[in-house]
Amino acid sequence: MKTTIVFYSYDGNCKFVSEQISSLLKADVVQIEPVKEKRRSKFGMIFVGAGQVIFNRKPALKPYTFDAAESDLIIIGTPVWAGSPSPAIKSFLSQTKITGKKLALFVCHGGGPGNALDKLKAELKDNTVIAELSLQDPVKDAEKAKAQIEEWVKNLTC
Image (tube, rainbow, N blue to C red):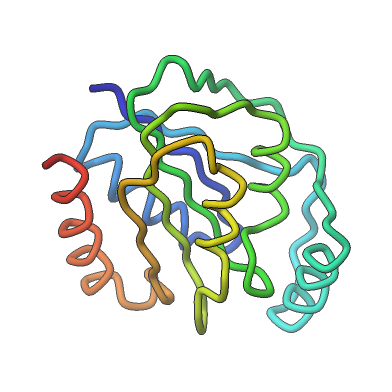
């Protein structure tokens, strides 16, 4: 079974999770990156990120290679911005047709997943979501996150 992980990571949390999943599943990894992304303070990022979510901004993305037809399982990971998936993942989903696939979803957040997983599922309604994972600050508590990821991956391979 071919598995592909597609993720966006602003602060390294989703990248960390993607690397852990990839090492366990030997999955291909596709990192989504906006063309323009300015690094900001935590407060600045919260303010700007919330504005992007509220106004439904979808940033232009750097080129990436992904073909949903080539994967049996697609894992999508995103940070939570203002209770929603990141604008970069929204851009990816608006540019990429994913239908009839088995999906697993994960979100990384600093205080709560909000409705990010429900919003992702709504965007991907023509697919079957087999697993969801919500991780709070996985890089801060890497050992705990690794254990959660390992358990979650076991459910993907059953």
